[in-house]
Image (cartoon, rainbow, N blue to C red; front, side, top):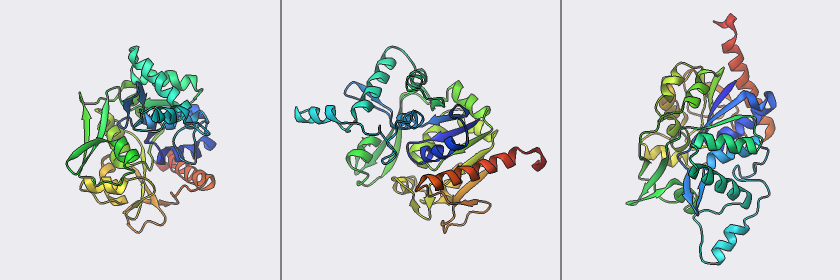
Length: 306
């Protein structure tokens, strides 16, 4: 079994490659939930949904979010009658948000609700939220604070980032399921997701870093030079007083990383890193990357290499 730590874009792309190499039930995904939010009576969990839609064969892989060929009739009509929402949701996507909200109101934990929805969507992979505590990533910009979704969707990341703040009513603790998924895996893969807003919230859950130290961990850098493959990772790293590059990413994960993978085009040299083509522009490159990572795992597991 392989366990992934995932945000909403980079790591799901990699998992698509792994789906060619192994059965879905052999994969477990621990997912960032610090971008979740409640609105219009529903509960949005964008990274969880992206992963669920991937394994349900519903994901729009042009955008890497939402359901393929979804409509936005409800969002459009709400705007028409004077009730615009902070995000435009697809109608099928909204149904999942409504269902999750009802499950949570009925007393289910987010882990339980995710298991229920994954089952209904016929996902064979095990999909786990990082914790059952509500955690929110906020962006401080020009003296005001906003939810990460407002920063990234409403403002399209085009406002200055002064600080990144994690809001929660209690310190997040990794669930027993998360810790077991790390402990029982043949390897843990931290994909090329945003280090600040996708992976670090998972690492901030009590118990996760300690569990990773006892595992074989492969990290794939989300940077090529000082440019992220996608998303606002560069601005967010700088707001954390870190350089936007692979070296800073490695430094962030150094304590538990066994193999660090950086792109073949990356001009930043990191001692001991494995060089692979990480720019997953098509299925062929993605599959080749997954195959190379699987070979690393197989080599590490071979007792002759001990």
